[in-house]
Amino acid sequence: MTAPRRFLPCLAAALLGGCGYTGDPLPPALMIPEAVQDLSGFQRGEAVLLQFTVPQKTTEDLLLKTTPEIELRAGENPQGGFDMGAWLAGSVRLPAPEVREGVARLSVPAMAWAGKEMVFGVRTRGPRGRFSEWSNLLVLRIIAPPATARGLRAEGTPEGVHVSWEGEGARWRVFRKSEAEFEQAAEVEQREWLDRGLSFGRAYEYAVEQVAQTGAAPAVSERTAPVRIEYEDTFPPAPPAGLRVLAGTGSIELNWDRNREEDFRAYQVWRAEEDGELRRLGEPGPSSTFSDRTAVPGKRYRYAVSAIDGKGNESRPCEPVEIVAP
Image (tube, rainbow, N blue to C red):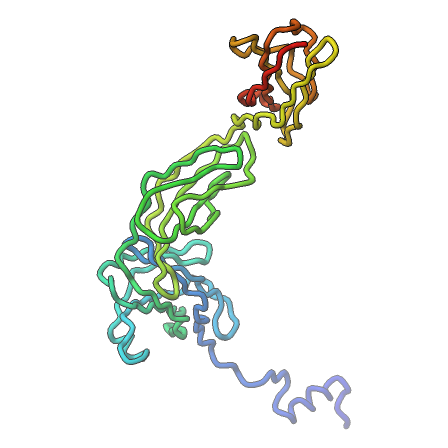
């Protein structure tokens, strides 16, 4: 009697080891976190600031459901070349960092290490108690805190905001805030900086910190308290140049070089009789020429011209030019 057709596949599988065979059972996952790759940090004032990304996966490419335990250590760089065992033996465990959105940050007092080259490393432990490899190692030379700048000032100029300060140091970073956050705007060797290309009618804040080169990562001072400025257009145009005064037929003719300011609007002509004071003559206008038909023949006059911009800022009158009316 032959076996029914529907039992033939199972019969064949049974001969190979059993119906429904799926292979040998896999060993349990070790759940070892991946090693941290981006440990970074620097000295600010009397503290060292450390930061790194907390691993989200294991070495088996499995997701970690919880944040792994973090072991962060600091130790002096051993003499005679780096040795991992010697570093670990002399290192101290640092407090647990704060973790937000997968990034760990820690500020740790550093003055006990002043004058020493310190090595920082981190590893993490997974849910089954196994540690990751050690991270990249961060080497920092700790120094006495760089001095904080003093007397920070921000003053508006036609070219931009002029930022200046006082203090001992050779290099400085300038930070600017125009909306939400401070961002580095410049790094300079002088105790001043001109922030060009700004927009009138906006508020800006500035802060400064000193930078001291100490090796792999510079040390910086505490940042100054910010100063705020409302950058408004209160700057007049340049006085007109090249004023020429000529005697005409029944008039005195004036002409001068045109101003180049983008926000220029008009010119104002000024006149003084004999040794009198300069007074406005006529209404402001955009032309760089003017005819004075009210001058009295034989009388001595002095003429000058000022420039006015779109905000109503007016320059001082240019150097007067004298003529006797014909």
